[in-house]
Image 1: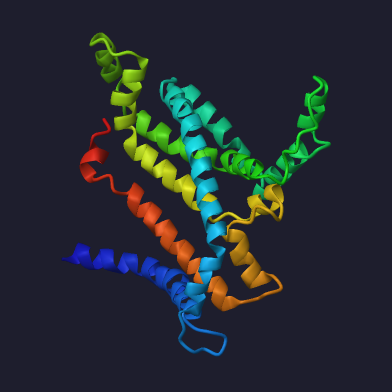
Image 2: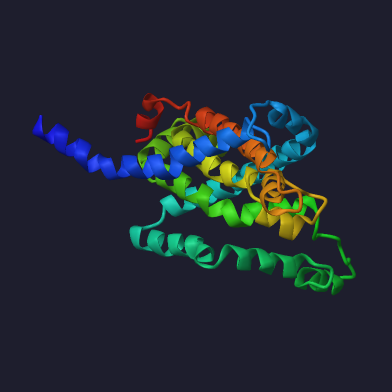
Length: 273
């Protein structure tokens, strides 16, 4: 009984923090989304989001593409890291996280310099008589920026899940005649599902709501949800109500994504051995 009361008191600072910095701001967003500039209740803000459906669709599509590419790239990397000796694992993990030590804006500016028409990539292609290619201010550049910035968020959960897969399980599959594709499909992927789910959430959520990457690498023709929300709060339109409505819809999208990836029950989590 005493331990229960102590636990409640220990959780009090966290509950206060949640109330002040999560619940209260969320209520403010809902209030502005459901009212007009005069404070009257209205659903016009939410219904008016339909005219931005193309932007929402583009955001979901590009975020899904970036997440899929991150998964394909991170899966072999995570497996390779999990099979190294402990001391080498630490070194390789540090190399994976090394780009994250640099400022997010600087990393994105670096890709702007590389992808522009007079950038390093086009100069190298010019040596082979190719180009210059139009790589900057395209949807492909936005996806590239997402993959580069969020790939470590996919590698780390997969690595954590795969370190729990015993080598004897893979050796048993090989002894039973399974080829590389069968081992991947029937052993590695099922046992890595918790890491896959976590990685998808950690990549898709920031990718679908990003605005810096799309603005710097995509130009004005590749606006995403985050760009629209920023314009409503900081742009010339300055419409807090519409910006809050967009934020609320984005929040619902994020929650749906998280509920989908968290559908793995406790039995699946315990299945990673």
